[in-house]
Image 1: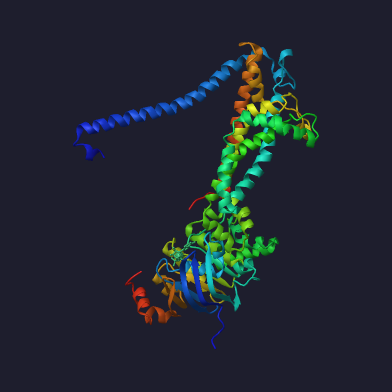
Image 2: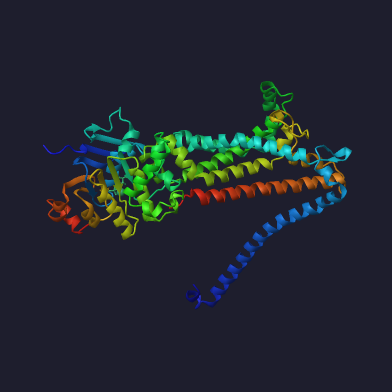
Length: 254
Length: 309
Ligand SMILES: Nc1ncnc2c1ncn2[C@@H]1O[C@H](COP(=O)(O)OP(=O)(O)O)[C@@H](O)[C@H]1O
Ligand SMILES: [Mg+2]
């Protein structure tokens, strides 16, 4: 028996109204590594990520889910699940950096204060730890009270990462986190992920196949809502089993 | 554009001539709007300035407004206007923003489709009709339930003005919240915020410049309002000394001008003082708008609550 999966999807079907976006997905994501989910636009990558912390609950459309999504073996859609707690355990970073209209410090402590934590020294400690983890501390330590919006794009994205890390999540979902960033900022974000992967399960939707190959420990190829192939990165990006995966990673379509 | 039409001399001349004409007309319209405001103010100044020669400042700054006996104290009128307006703001802002939140964030789609147009219809009710309703239906309630000696009080005016300001506040505040990008909400939800926490801590602050504008426009309508106020506030010029001034009659600047202008002899001292009241109103309104604009500008620079990116 392999190590227990951090996240497991069993026969997951997901649809917006009558438009099926994910079709019979079966997937086991092991803990504490970088798992990459890639495929052409419209394949359902974002939908899959949003399913994992139930952001799909807020969809204005009607949604239909079949199958099971398990976090540490627990069904996250079970009726007794504390959704707030789930979202803290499985945090999310989006494609466009969205600092909240608050100071740098308050952006990071926002999630904690929602939970009612007010203790100043804990909060300060969290701010410093999270900013270090996101490789942003040195750049902002003297201006923690400036608005988060005043940072550059790359810094904003690392702020968003720090904000997510502040909640000490077990899983972090990143949806094309570097798609709007310059190459240097991209490397800084990737570097931050490498530093943390011993203790956090990252699920990353990359913005290019190159990035997928660069950061992945394991990867899965998603095409039109179907999981085509899943496996260790070195296999998937060098000798994929499926012709469609090969065509995509070698740039023949996509 | 020049090179393309260079070969066709006549048509280019026609186009240029038209362009020129349109430009001049638009410029004229723009300038005349500015000139009109300037003229109004100049006229106010010209008619009001005589006051300063005819009435000593100590009289103008006095607490009694009895024009027939030569008492021209502006203070009770200014206070009356402020009282009624502040009351209207205190009622309309929480209510308006609350309704906007409900409409934009909470109400189910079909209900919203009925409520929004209904609210906008309220904006079209002529103020004299509102005043009528106020006198007949609303003021008896005030007398009965708030224990006021008469139903025609400052609070009666405040409530009706709030009612007039509400559609503007609701509709513009709702638009402002609607413009907050979905990504902000997602970010808050992803941190474990509930819907209400997201509205309170993310949507409202992000939309605050729009909400402030909504309040300014709504209150702007209220402060300049004459008819309703004249009909329902009882028009007694007195200085509010405590909170229960809300339950006593009050007299605003606008109501004073409207009520007395028709009865004064042109060129008399009373006539000049009424223009002085107009100048005071003009300046006060200007100051309030300027303060609001500065506050807006400040909060924008500090909080960075812009709807950018
Ligand atoms: N909120 C939504 N409502 C309806 N359809 C959606 C919604 N979000 C995504 N979709 C549809 O689901 C499909 C997959 O989208 P998405 O998960 O964003 O794919 P990807 O991230 O791989 O580009 C697309 O066809 C898209 O149009
Ligand atoms: Mg996507």
